Image (tube, rainbow, N blue to C red; front, top):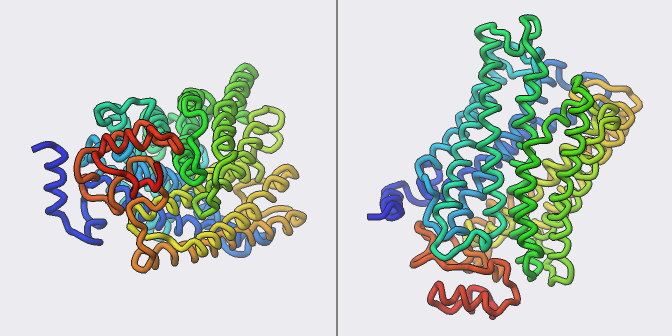
Length: 555
C-alpha cells in the first residue's frame, strides 16, 4: 500500500461531512479549509480590536478606553492580524489546498506534520485572546521592543511570547512541508518551469520562513529569559543592548512582509489570466523576480532602524538595498498589467478585488520607496504615515487578494457559486472604506501625528473621524461577505467542475475534489496559462485520457 493510499484509508476512518473539519485530518484540502475558516474567525476578532482603536481615535482625548487598555488592544490587533490571519491564510490555507494539485500529488509530503502545524494555531490564538481577560495583555506592541516589553506586566508578556512561538513553530513546519512537496512530489514529466506561479511564490515564501522565523524564535526566547530569569541580553539596566534586539527582530519581521505578500502575488497571478482569458505575461521574469525578492528581502531589515542610531554606512547600504527591491516588484506589476491588456476581462468579484490589489499595492510601494530614503524616514518614522503605508501593503496588498481568492476558488471548495451582486457590494464597501480609512493617515503623518498613542493634537480630529468612518465601512463590508459565504454553501447555484473554464490542475477534477484529488492519474499540465494555445488542451487531454471539452469549454 502506498503512503497516499494509506492516508486515504485513514481518512475514510475519520468523521465524515462537516465533522471532519473539526478532526485531526490528514487530507490537505480539509486542512486548507481549516486554516481558512480559523483565520477568518481571528480576522473578525482583529477587526473588532481595530474598531476599538478607531473609536478611541475619533476624538483627540482618551475617552473610549483607558490608555493601558488602548495599548493592550493595539498589541493584540497587530499580533492577531499578522500571525493569526494573514500568514496562516495565504500560506497554510490556500497553500495546503492548492499546492498538491499544482504539483500533481495526492497530498502534502508530510501529512501528519501538516495537521500538527494547523492544530498549533487554535491554542496559540485562544491563549493570546484569553490572556486579555485573565492576566491582561502585553502593552508593548506587536514588536515587543525592550525596555518597554521588560516593564509591561511580566506574565502578560510571557504569554504573548509563548503564543507567538507556537505560531512561529507552525509556520516553520509548514515551510518545510511546502519546500519538500514542490521539489520532491512533482508528477513525473512536470518541470519546475511549468509549475503555476503560486508554486514559485510558496517556494520562495517557505525559504524565507525557514531561514528567518527561527531567528525570531531565538530572539523571543532570550527576551523571555530577561523577563523571567532577569538575564541581561536586552535589558539596558544590566548591560543589554536594545538595538541588537531590533536587528534580530527585524531580520524576521521585514521578511514577514514578503511572507505575507509573496503568496498573494502568486494567487493573483493565478486569478488574472483566467478572468482575462490570456496567458500570464512574462512567466520566466515573474519566476526570477520572486527569487530576487527572496534574496533582497533578507538584506533590507535595517531600514526599520534608521532612527535607532545606525551608522551612516549602514544607512546607505540599506537605502540602496531597499530601493533595489522595488525593481522585481515593479516587474511583477507591469507583467500583471500586460496580462490584463487586451484581455477579455470578466469584471466579477474575484477580478475586482485583484485589480484593486494592484492599485493599492502600487500606492503602498511608492510610499515604501519614499520611506527607504533616510531623510524622509527620519521625518515620518514614528508617525501615522508609516501606519498608512503598512496597511496599504498588508491589507491592500494581501487581504484584497485573500478575498479575490475566496471568490475564485469557492466553487472548488464547495461545488457552488457565490452571489456576484453581494460580492460586488462587498468589494465596493471594502475598497471605499479601506481608502477612506488609510489614505488620510499619510497626510496625518506628514504633519506630525504620532502613531501608537491614543491622544493627539485637536487639529487632526476631522481626518481621524474620516478614517474612523472608513473603518466602519470596512466592518460593515464583512456582513454581505459572511451572508454570501454561509448561504451559498447550501443554496448557491451548482458550479460544475470547472465554472471558470480554467486550465490549472485543480480545475481538472470534480468540485469538490475526491479524497485522492483525481479519480485516476494526475493530469500533466505543461501550459497552465495556455489560453488560446491549441497544444495546451491536447497535452492535457493526452495526460488525462479524456476529452476536456466539458472541462475547459474551448479547444
